[in-house]
Image (tube, rainbow, N blue to C red; front, side, top):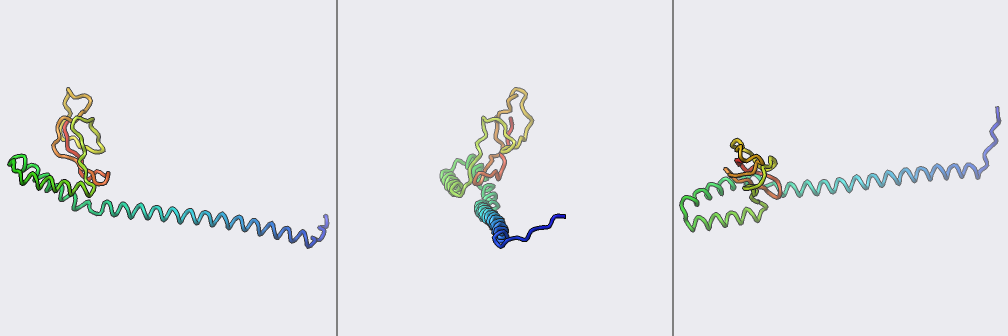
Length: 151
């Protein structure tokens, strides 16, 4: 067996410096990860809060859209200028809060925004929407009512 020669004070100090440098590097990396995790938590929380605010009104908007559609049907039958004005104002209000009608007539069938309510016409092989049974709507880009169509 070889005898280990005693370490000089300089050697032991260099080893200690190397250990401390390794610990500093490890702790620095841990701090960077913690900061990145914290930034991700802040970003996710902000996105969730934003989505909550955007879609908190989804129930009332859906209910108002049903009334809007009933009024629109009545206006088509009655041809009343006052009713048409009220419907227009209601639509402006809904639109200002992020509601948009999904345009589907004459467009290819898209299952992400439409529901087929009648079998496809054999002559319409490209599945282009030929009739809108019920209009579809989105709220801030999210579909809240699928358009009911026939192709």
